[in-house]
Amino acid sequence: MGNRKISPDLKLAAVRLHERGVLTTREILECVGFSRRTFLRICKLYRETGDVIKPRSEYIGRPRALNIEDVAYLTELVQHRPDWFLDELAGLVQRNRFISLHYTTIHRELHRAGISLKKLRKVAKERNEDV
View: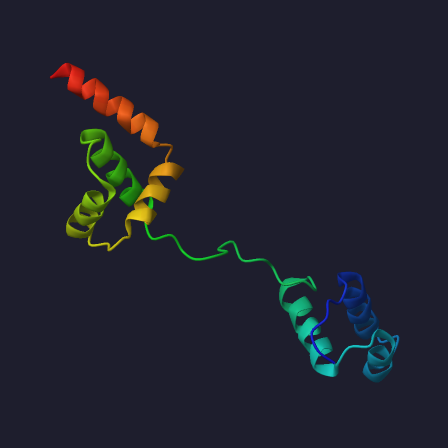
């Protein structure tokens, strides 16, 4: 039959009919219209989790290249020397944290940390005035 979305209500109704013994498995499958394998998978999921829908994973997407400590290290570097280029930061991270990164990843992480080019220019300008 192919992949299609089966409503959670239909799945739950089929499982309850099976649990209560109201209909045989064959009769349930004729009524609901999905395969025996799908029905058994739904029943197993219901027994294990108490629900007919798989719980969503909290980790969606690709894992981040940098953890919180790495981002903190990057922000320290930028606050210490705001005139460094992204490729220089990448070299420092590779040497000191043993993480190979592309400069766009560093830019993205600094942006997520709330550091923009405008803020970097401002900090660099303030440092030049102090000298």
